Amino acid sequence: PPHRWFLVGPCRSGTTVHIDPLATSAWNTLVHGAKRWVLFPPHVPKSVVKGRKLILPGEDDEAIHYFTTILPRMKRRAAAARGTEDDLYANFECYEFTQFAGETVFVPHGWWHAVLNVTHTVGITQNFCSRRNFDEVWAQTRSGRKKMSCSWLRRLGERYPDLARRAVELNRRDGFIMWEDDPIEQGKWRRKKAEKERKKKEKRERKKKEESKAKKKQSSKKEKWGEHRTTERREGECDGDVVMREVSPDC
Image (cartoon, rainbow, N blue to C red; front, side, top):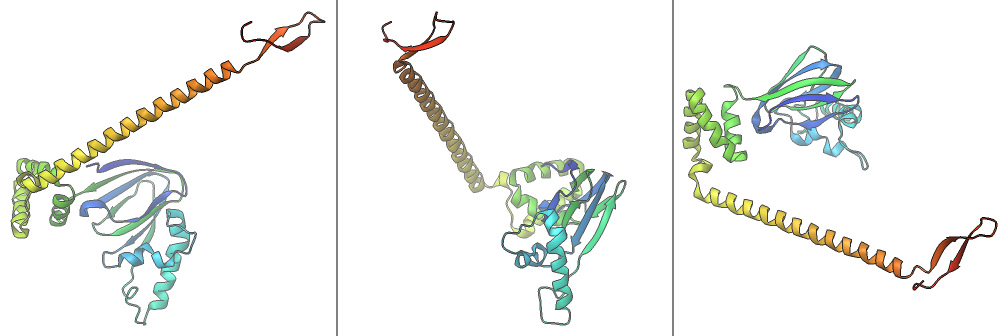
């Protein structure tokens, strides 16, 4: 899947808090500008990281609002919870810093993070799988990207045989059947694909009918307007004035 991006962002834009997909880690190198980061270790609950209970009616969780409003509320809540029985914020941790041009940030897999562009920025980022987090990435990929995981396993067999053996071992341990070897999953995929194609076809046919109906309606309006036109613009000879007079359609 797409895993490497060239990023261009205006000031005050950014990304909302999230975890990178498929248990991958990531690096982000800034070429121009400055970015503000916040990272949360995996043990911090999702409900805390998202700040759902701290967002007031009419507010959103866009990057600029998250950094200027929600995150400060979160830290105040965590400070107030110290020494109390507030389990949600008992082990609260977050790491904030500013990244400048020429610096690279490493985001470990499973870490929540959000980014705010303090200035106009240009950067490069890539998600990747290493030997350290291979087990987690493979477990999520084989379920979340079933067809792709089959291709990946073949490529691993060609370039990294030891990792291919590890993937097969994990499948055997968990009783997981790959998509290529599972006729039931293949049948589900074919039915899903057929249903998707059917909906696309219906949408195209519906669009054609609507366009045809609109053309007929427009044509009917033009004919109706022509039939009811009862005035004709003619130039008069009196002092060069233009006069309008009623005329018969037969004239």
